[in-house]
Image (spheres, rainbow, N blue to C red):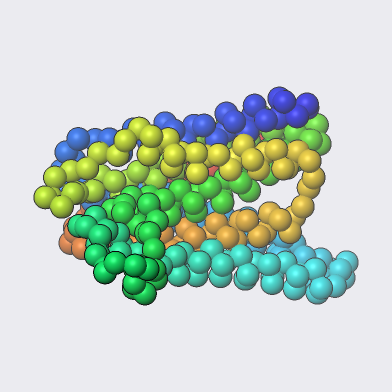
Length: 298
């Protein structure tokens, strides 16, 4: 398959993430609905964590099987294992330190919004020089920053999906590539819902609901779905199992961190029934879309 047609497949698979984003503009979702949306998003991400982690572990499992059958050494399995741990740790811990950095930036952003600190004439004061200007993201609400983290984790996962589409197209396996596009396209639609779920409970300083702009939603869609297109382009050029392991384990680590954040939000609502219903709904949605791909013979 030509590169142009392959890139079109990657675009189609990634753009379906936009289908779930308009939910983020619900005007005034009830507290029960917000809790259910959050729990459902958690269920979707739990499925993605399992799906991504199992895919990242597959090359290690195959290498260990070869060792057991006497067809290979432990070097390959150990190498993949190191990549697995590095990716998982980087995806998880990078977001931990990122959140700490953002927590330090937020007070600075608040200070600048209230008004600049005045110093005497002449050169800037030491504190003014050190403070600098906060990043734009530091002025976002916690719900928006969580949506960004979800989009980043899903984007890493979708890059690996794009690699699979590009590699199958490059090998001339057209039917497989088309089935992957259909399956991943359906799957990405549920991921878009997961990105915007935290926004249902976003409130301003006066307690009024905040509706994200279409520009913000499109930006989150680009972060989450765009890597599918990029991965398709990369996968069409070369095949690399170590690259797949790295990106899959990175995605697993980042998704795991986001799941812990969403579970923390869910527990504060004190509605274990809605948490259970939402988790079940999200898991079923994830396994259902994945089952469509498997049933198609992929």
